[in-house]
Length: 78
Image (tube, rainbow, N blue to C red; front, top):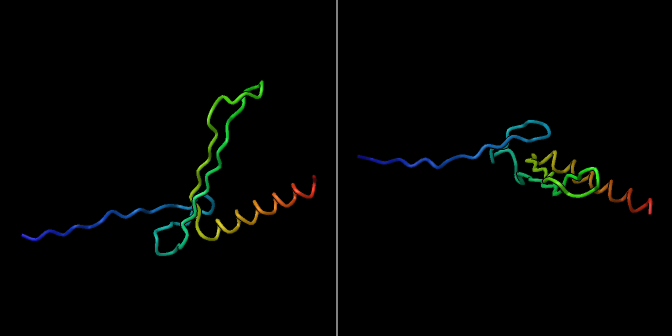
């Protein structure tokens, strides 16, 4: 009798563009987590509003550029 063990494969889908990330077409397999609290009408935290996104390499680069641009714009307004 022979035994063949096949390891499990993890396949993710980019939350932005929908491309399948299977390890062969992505080097970084980016994950973006934005931690936040939802606020009630009195501005008190009332729930978890954390967002977790799986991103392909292309979308990860675009999101990073957008974050950098937003931070630069906020610095200029001060």
